[in-house]
Image (cartoon, rainbow, N blue to C red):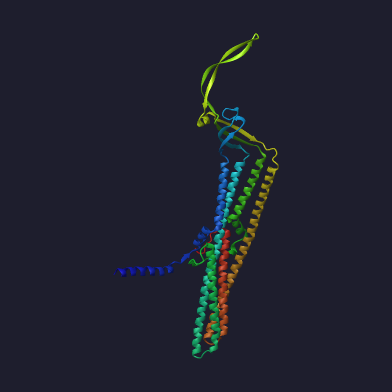
Amino acid sequence: MKFSKYFLVALLLQLLTISSPLYSQEIWSLEKCVSFAIEKSLQVEGSNLSLQGTEIDVNQARHGRYPNLSASTNVGWNFGRTIDPTRNEFITETFFNNGFSLNSNVMLFNSGRINNTIQQGISNNKASLKDLEQTKRDISLNVASLYLNILFAKENLQNAENQLGLTLEQLGQLNKQIAVGNRPENDKLDIEAQKATNEQTIVEARNNLTINMLNLKQLLRLDPDYDMDILTPGEMPVDTDPDIVTFSELYQSALNSQASVAANEMRVKSAQLGEKIAKAEFLPSIGAGGSLRTNYSNKGLNITGYTSSIIEQTVFINNQEVTVGFPQQIPQTQKSPYFNQFSDNLSYGVGISMSIPIYNNYTAKAGLQRAQLNTERANLNLTQTKETLKITVGQALSDAKAAKARYLASEKTKTAQNNLYNNAIKRFEIGNLNAFELTRLKTSMESSSINALIAKYDYLFRTKVLDFYLGKPIVLAK
């Protein structure tokens, strides 16, 4: 009984393990693909690192307003005649000394250099933010392009399978007619050739779907064997009609919505602030500072008291030698302790300094010239960005209009070819059309269907590019 219970549990676990792959496939929407691609993108990670670097620069520039503080210490042995730092006396003996100091300085006036450096850092930070935003928008457009490619590949595969179904249906009908003697045996050769062509088309369509799915996985940084599929939206309406969008409207919207333009504008402002920073090198600067110092010496002494003593000295009075005694207080000393000397030898001071540049070996002037070149370069990059955007926007609008015309024409052709093929089937069934002509008309119908499908997704993608430049979010279904 116990064995049977364990056996049933093991069997149940095995069945769950076998059946779990059936439900392991994830269905990804466009929004999920975009958010995941942005999260895993190395480009976004690099932009984030650049952004963090500019934030560090801003913090460093702001701390330039505050006083600095530094501490130092020294340890040494002195030999020969030197000054004892604790007694300020010349001595000719070896001694050990140890010193400590604190120093602080603050900039009071430097012609706006600190403020301009802060503003420059803020401008660079805003430019990095715009770079990050542009990177995310570019990734969104790339993901949408691959997503549409997969939708096209899936619909194209479905269309190829439907065409094979039609061919098999025709072959079945032809076999019935051959069986009753209404058609010769050779008539089915063209249909069988068409069947082989349809099967080849299915293989190519399935490979195309696999390749596009691999491209999406690569962009999402997923393993190639990751089991996923994309969500197929229902109706995918075209929100932007290229025929009613003007170039000036589209270009102005692109100037306002494209973060790369705003990033270059911020870099122009940063370069102009760099000129002001360089000009500050020609002007005086005023600073204040303070210091605190103390020393220790193993020759340092403390006076513990005094003893009275008569010091005799020989003098001459009227050419007579006379010994005279002078009372004198003789200090009694002992070695001063280590920590006592720190308080006894403490000294401090404050002061104000001014630095007036007179000649600095062309350094300041060269710095200003480089800053001016940086401004010209930033303006040139901004102009080039706008000109490139103008060309890109014009091309996008032209492509969208052409895609719309191509799509409408392909739909008309598809309808005409379908009607022609349906009429041919009726003629074939009553014996007024041979299999070769039917196959030719079916091939034309299939080509028109494929061309219409290509035109449909090309038109849809071109309108999404217009939405991109209009600053609209990229969505496929409402």
